[in-house]
Image (cartoon, rainbow, N blue to C red; front, side, top):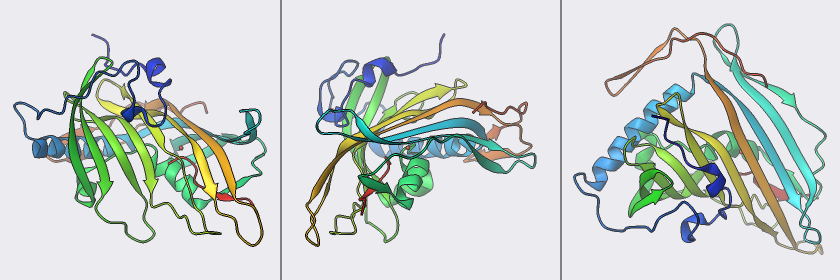
Length: 289
């Protein structure tokens, strides 16, 4: 048997609002209740599995390739670009570290990237909904859906409340019925700051996951695209800026560690041979002054 996987070629054609549209690879959404298991049990299993995955992912090296473009309304082509490739690895003492291996000059002129942009790339785009985080979200069961060769449960997810200086995922998640793990998400980062002169905006995004090492589903590809609206102020004209973000997570490799992770009675033994690789909520944006 080969590992289960989403057929990425089919999914890449989807718009950011893929959950609302019929697209190749997606069957109809069946809203009937699950059989043989309750919705709270599904959520509990997912939270535990996501927690185990979050612990395991911290023991992997990988390459993160982030490309953020502003798109010209006249040509439909990029007129500014931020591009950075980073090795996420470990030093000799086992501490996590990042090495930028490719970073050409930033040519973005119409917006500026904020601190939240980079936090979103690290935390929100590769969304993991662990058991400790579940109490902060409302999950509404939407139904079951066949996606490529997977049978999934679909949930609407939104934060119960917005805490100051915290950012959250809001949207839909697809959970594999067999592995009890998120395999696809589509949504947006909240809150969005729309105050004139203080805008901190981001477009909707979709993240795809792939099974690595035959066990956990890792984020491998994110696409975000939309038009950000900046309100006119101090005599300046309002701006509508079309932006597109592509983040690729590749070359996942388990790193040597002597730590054995325990979670909910499960032992995650991460002892492997050391390996180092060769070489994102979409960037939120503010108008360039």
